[in-house]
Image 1 (cartoon, rainbow, N blue to C red):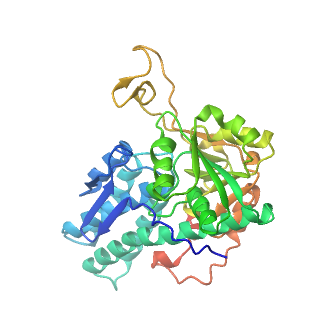
Image 2 (cartoon, one colour):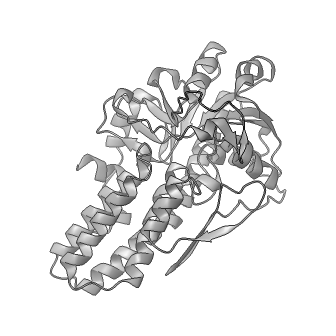
Length: 384
């Protein structure tokens, strides 16, 4: 039964109305809470690259909404020039941060939709423009519904393994409202457990070197008065041993066909520690994060970030000038270490079951193309 206590609303990090987009500048958190305008795809590319917005779902949403604004403000001579612009700008947005697959998935999906509308003589240039704007805008609304389903499925699965007793969750990086359109993926599971009065405590890592855990996740947990403790990345094994951790729940930037998962650097070692301590390790993500075109994690391109992210914090030097640095933004957790399962909006699946289970999702309940919202994202994937 859901608690009667009043929960504070989740943080809003993306503000959109047709022709106008603002994002919460995550570089300034926790010191200040400021929104900045995004007027076109170039603004979005820079905001994503500089990590003013981050998190795989939020990257795709902000990228797509920036294109919607551009389409709203720009005139085109014909359908061909319109569709060429859509496809070109979507591909451009993918280059901002290539490891996260969600923007690439959106690029494929919306490019295919634009091409189909262009070839359909029933649609004029203005029809195509209007429909594309509407479809791009639905990213925001649909992501929140998806996240709530992920939170529900994850909470139910974890509680099923704990005989419905309150649990302690350890999470990594930031996977909440600041990384999505709202509610969150892994942090959405934590949020749902809290709503059900089934969360004893949440532990979040600092997530060096960019401190998404200490700056962002801790900020969300305090904002929503969820009982939580911040720990250094190097404390994970000790916490697993001594603090009664029921499950580890993390997000994902890409899940490939065999279940290998790319996520924020440090995730791999958490999975190893969880395996040693016999603690279930979960990945929470929408199916848009699944990439069946890559067979194993060895194929995932790992983004390397600038050295100054390791050596300086807000202009303060943490290391001597001249030291060599290795700063991968992500690592890959092998499927066999994801012992709890992969939590999606459709349910919780073991990594080696995910591909076949998604293939079996009933597609007949969705309308036919070109209404892209009516089709599962996995349908789009299987048609590549």
